[in-house]
Image 1 (tube, rainbow, N blue to C red):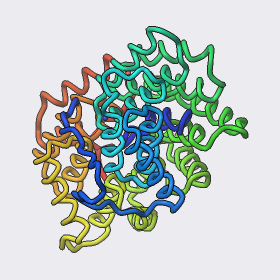
Image 2 (tube, rainbow, N blue to C red):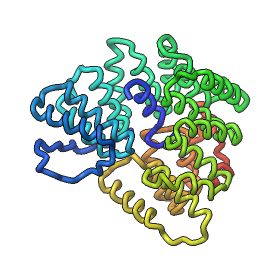
Image 3 (cartoon, helix red, strand yellow):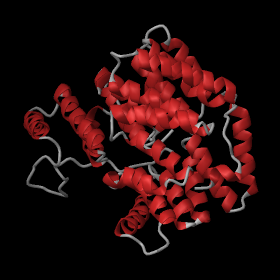
Image 4 (tube, rainbow, N blue to C red):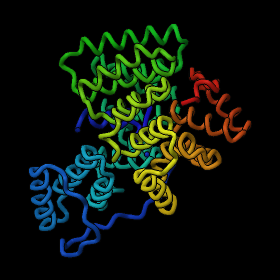
Length: 392
């Protein structure tokens, strides 16, 4: 699984549409004349008109919960569509008056969405648990299952998938169970699970794009982890034909190309997406492998600055990507291990484990290697941790 934890992003996108890092409360100016900074407004004109209209209405009626939700959700949608996290800060600021005592369903789900983005997974689970005490909701069940999957709590994932089985369609149910079974089964069983999920995907002609991309990504990642490169690439290309700019699939495909030393193809694939952190890092890895020169590019200098800034701000949302960059581009194994260990405290997906294992191997930390091996045994995760699998 990948950056920004695609599964839980999809879960929210299915229905209406991340380490407990402490962030300072966002400030939302009451007066547009008071400008702290200007965000790049490269979204559609109709989105801009909607936001301006909602801001005017909310300023006139600041206690209107419905208007607050509409404005915050508009900001959150722009953040998701434009990959610009600053709009999530604006969304949080708008609904802050109802952050602790709001009972509106839509506001609660938007709050969960923001908590997930900030990697505040435990807090998001608490919110969902409270809501699910009063009534069973398929959307909340799927989101809770996805967060538990990120946390590596597979028994809890299976429990929620079982409850979901009574209320969701076949593709959502199959993908939910696959998010565990597709990564904890033997190679032979995994192939059967992948084939079954592929068939369900292909038969679900009327399913939404987000659901299909989520299911295809799960199957492709599982195939890639078992080194079934042909199946993995077929699935990735199938998904990219549906949504050519999906960052989850692009990350998966870039990793496959890097593993196969197809560096030029990886560069060509990612060149248009260098503004996205996870994809920029894979682009830098490919360039570092293809070209002999070690002169830093402007993009790499910008990334180095971004890493330092995030360290100062204690922003831990991109620690996995930074560890990947320090491991495979900078060769700074101790720094990579430090970031990977902090990241491991909050999320334990397959890619988190691989990066942590690679950093620990190169930093010669046998204690960390043993810890990951114990985790893999306990969770029954089937990952190839051989040194060969760590090479790019």
